[in-house]
Image (tube, rainbow, N blue to C red):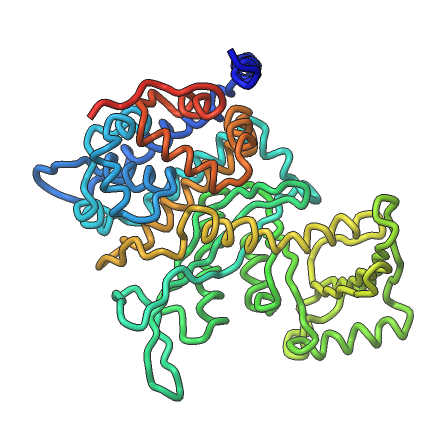
Length: 456
């Protein structure tokens, strides 16, 4: 026996011993969460009448499985339906699997609001497992990032749900779809906990500001229906620092951190300059031992009027500079907030405010560039299809984020590959070639052994 083979066997045995020590949490492992998802689907009333070939629960689970496995299209998933039917039924609990055409027809009639309870149930499992305690950010509140994003654009294909943009010079019309995404984040954690997104609709207006604002208003109302007692700090960009939106936030008992730009708030910035000149502002610097080359400079003005037309809307203005002695560069940020800002908590506040980018980087970019194919057109439909697909994708992403947070087996399987894309490629490969009893079996097989080959 060669030295290489002996070393391989020893390595295999070490990995086997290590995987046997990996214990799963009862309610926060892949198989338990997938069962919860199917139970949630089974509780949705079928909008169809008469005899059906595929139950609504099976059809919804087929869509969820497609995103769970990171298949790039319905066509690819349809091919999987033939090659890996046993595994799909074994792992995802389906009694039958619709073809791509049937799936589109069935899901098009599903009310998207009926999928919201599944996000709430996943959130409840995180609360039950005390995972959410890690995400408490400030004053007992969770940091909730909101932002709009586009996920479909075409000059020819469209449906009644599509927004339209007419180009001035050419007169050409571009059809597109957008949604408002939401994620609970923390500056110390790379994982995000997504909530059900809210689709931006045609009737929301023709301007980006109006469209997003009206969709956010609906989102806030639904947020309070789902989580009436949880405390949130809503973290948004400069488009949101306006009096009507702040009134919406306050009406829903929500704190806020909103970006503010001089071009949009000339009155506010002039007031701040005058207040500092009168000695009413607070200014100080902070340095940290682990980053001595960075100097953090702050300026705070309390009870500042938001703008000239809404001087009764008072906010706390926070200005921040980060000076880097190594590069000679300075980064500059300004926010308005209703939080109590002190010299003791302002650095922590700043880290949370800057974590707004997690909705873009850790959420939207991950969905678009790391296997979920968020910007792929899985189907427009005539009613709700595109919105249902977005919700199923977000739900699959949420389950993955939960596993990344608290499932040691999933974490170990991911770490055994250099990139997350490579990890998902190997998941699909195992799924295609071998019989897999459950997700635990699949993740352990990625670490140490090959399961039984599928028979065709």
